[in-house]
Length: 195
Image (cartoon, rainbow, N blue to C red; front, side, top):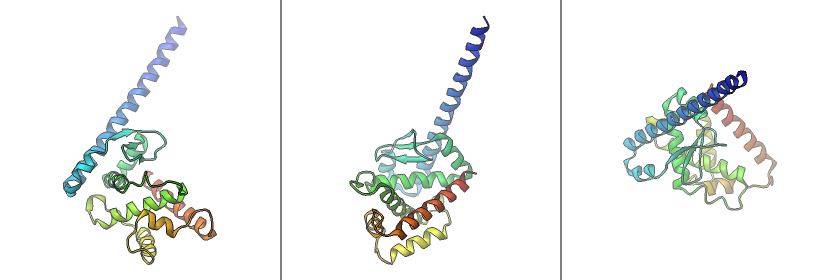
């Protein structure tokens, strides 16, 4: 009799955890839907693109990522990000959409993944920052400095151009240091947003 009581308690705890996870997933989907709707109001010309990027909870994405067909999100991370301000959710959605529109997930080929992903992120972020939309604006003098440095060599900041400017394979030790420092700085900015 005691065992069945413990088993029921354990099952109840598991059920409650599953219910809580489902609520977080639904709330995450609503947050991204709200972000999409807000972006559609400001960028009606992308309405069809917004409508063709479904959102789903995913694993190994922090707070979100796309494979070119679906925008996957980590519910816990997305909720923390949203608590800092809804501008972050809208920016995240638009950033991911630009990855899809520019086929970033499909053009990696034999490129070094770490450098390619960083180049894609810089290209997408430069476009988001260049839009001057209040619903996605986050002040960032460091990002502007990166864009200015890259703009000295590239007339348009494309992922391919940025990647070529940062050759893979460690041919320049300064590049490894630059990528490491940039990733650390970006990770620090992101973790500060989640606190």
